[in-house]
Length: 239
Ligand SMILES: [Fe+2]
Image: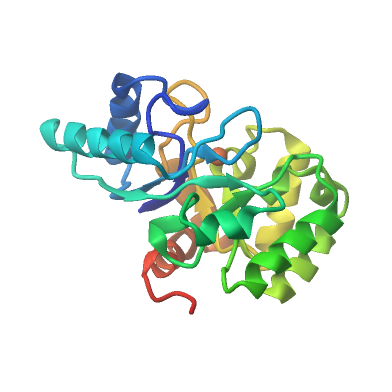
């Protein structure tokens, strides 16, 4: 399986604090069927996690890759980030200060959980106008969709890709978030499911439980955890 959203790059955000925790996360993931992982640290979040694609990022990535090899982990690591959308996001992507998933045309993007729908729609359209195809992280957690999940139809018509979280789908974030994810899944609006793991105690990286649930409830496990992620990561996605 492919995990397109995981906070495993150590010491850069609220995910793995150390290489040791990152290794524990990777072992958990490998034991439960993950073979490819896109590291997606929070980035461009003003005043909190202002990570960019700089030497620090590249050094941390190389260190993690080397550690995986030394520990004989088979998981393939791929570069990415979870980009907090600001007005200047397109310029920063164009300058490669921020990066997409695997340097394709697909950025993984997030907003404040209380962000207004109109701002999200405007910024997602701006990205599309500049030939990016945004993958919106965990919209089921955003207030606007929990109250009006049907608004997602507007974003889908625009071509926005949707990623839901394991914890949302399985109900670990509560009933209303699970219901919202269920609404999206039943409408066929979800493109990717991912762990969005932050550690080894809560929000963990195993994907097997999610696979079984998606398979049993929706028949979508292979599509959301393997086929669509693989397609998104292939370099020629969008011109
Ligand atoms: Fe995340």
